[in-house]
Image (cartoon, rainbow, N blue to C red; front, side):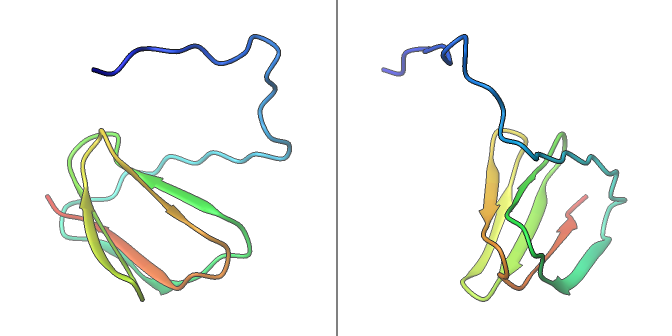
Length: 79
């Protein structure tokens, strides 16, 4: 059984940290590309497909995918 834990009260967020949210219409995608930074891809609602050289995965709002610096990937909205 999972138990809830709290982050330490004095834990500061990483610096620098950038957050971006973007609506992706159904059946639209970002073509293959890479970044000079790590990226966490997540879905606020619906489902996203993330494709990389390691394969593909479909994620729902309860999930996220970590993409390390330089990894070529593409992503898109399923519906």
